[in-house]
Amino acid sequence: MLLLSKPLKQVVIAGVAAFGLTAGLVQAETTINGAGATFPYPIYAKWAEAYKAKTGTSMNYQSIGSGGGIKQITARTVDFGASDAPLTVEKLNEIGLIQFPMVMGGVVPVINIAGIKPGELKLSGPVLADIYLGKIKEWNDPAIVKLNPGVKLPQEKITVVARSDGSGTTFIFTHYLAKVSPEFKEKVGNNTSVSWPAGVGGKGNEGVASYVQRLKGSIGYVEYAYALQNKMAYAQLQNKTGKFVKPDSETFQAAAAGADCAGTPGFNLMLTDQTGENSWPITGATFILVYKKQEKPEVGKEVLKFFDWAYRHGGKLAEQLDYVPMLTSVVKLVEETWKKEIKDAGGKAVWTDSMVQK
Image 1 (cartoon, rainbow, N blue to C red):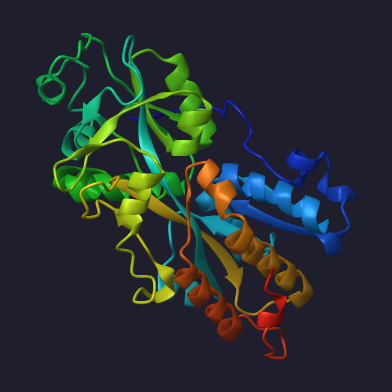
Image 2: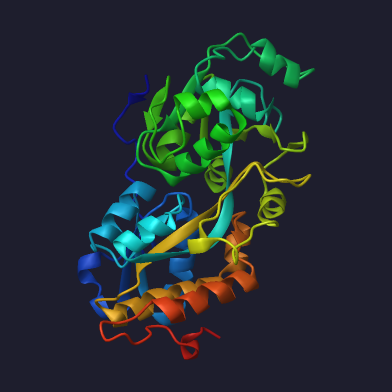
């Protein structure tokens, strides 16, 4: 069974962290508050810093995991929630929310094997699933050796590291493994939190990264920016066409190329195991959740103005961290949804075209 631990590092970002402010000292009318997914934490921090400098408005964001973000927006303790696990249209309607995608990125397997460089190890989806099922227990297992001719793999125990918290990163990761392994789908399934057959658990991308860095022979999964920032070795993956690919913005873009936002109710997009020769197989979008009926419409306007600015002016910052910005056509669809569905108590639209950040 998965062994859980206390978080190695508290995951909280905010105008607090970025600007040296505390939420209690910031005027309510110039502060928006959100919580949720750790997957987009690096880019939300960058956007918050740039937006603060431009507008004076602070964005406080608690990176507590997608499950926590959904709970907080449901309880109305934040102005927006963030999740990498899109909610169904039925669930959105039940709570009274809309969701929209902000950026896309990749989840990558990270490893700690002596002598193995980033991108040197090759894994297939079924082999990765068998590792997380606890069926493949050592790095020199024949199934791994077969994929890595010429690579010296040690006879070393594999320590599996997974997320211990409710996580959209886990949702994307298990969505992929359940697609490529019927046994994984049956025994573990796809959710923000699952019962892992083996291994240790870390809280947040930071917790998983810290464990993998400390434990020899370990494997974990994190958002790509965390792998880069922590200079971690990552594995190549065999995609649906049979080609081994490395994670980067180009392979994420290849996976996102076929996304049909217009034809997907509630923007409920999953981008795992996409066709396309260069597609990274564990690609996903991250979503923002807001209420259709805004009890505080002025705050709601500030939330939408921030994300409109991010869509229109945050693309380069996103690309610098190897996220994939949303296409202009998708942004247009999203903002049309804002106009139609987000209202104040009197039924007046909270968002209008005049608010667009030029």
